[in-house]
Length: 344
Image (cartoon, rainbow, N blue to C red; front, side):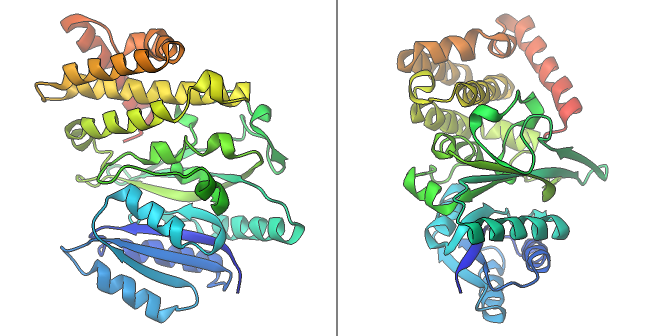
């Protein structure tokens, strides 16, 4: 049977929580035959993730596939799922996260309607919810004030995004052909590549639909989680790597035709550069500030207009204040934003 949607689930030593993720998709979609789930075992060796993946595929052979690969990191696992996808649409669900059953049911019904009507919608956007395990609170991110609800639109129809509203991986359901046509690649053994996933394909998305449901539940709270503050600081070089991929993907002011998308992408890239600046200042690496300067110099050489916007706009100035006092003010501003938005 033709598959409407493929859910990719990258798994690396995920046996403690992958079952919950898989079950939430199966229950939400009613074990439908036009749904595909691809579990990508990314070279797990510390637990029984490979065996669990195979067991799930054996129990639901018409719905679930298990794919095994040598460890390549999150991005490599996502792209493995894309390469193996049979669905018209693709949504990534990380193995420690899950989906809301009612919301996914609504999403699936909408995608089926697109298929029935022959509508080639390139990107479907839904809401997501941060689930904070440490204090049992939730923080919902929706787009109802910036995106048209319940109709197909283009980037020219969107409004202004606030800093906490950016379109992260959790919000995105792409048409598979879009991801393949843009030749999306994410560097191996690199965290935070979800920023590439939520940036590089956007200019190729010419038709968009916003479905105002809280589909994705994003778990925050494990000490080893990549967005944990200490972990992120220790992996600042991963953010440098991601920033370089995003930097060289486009000369934003020349390559992106939609003025509103151009502004959005430049703002988002500016935030990534700001993250690089903040966590370079937080890092104990002796070469952190030198490497940060190399990154800024590379941007200036690549595209002076992008450099001026990212480095000398309000966000760039605030996260690159000079001297010891400047560093202290930058980090104080980061901590205030962290408490307000609760993004990690």
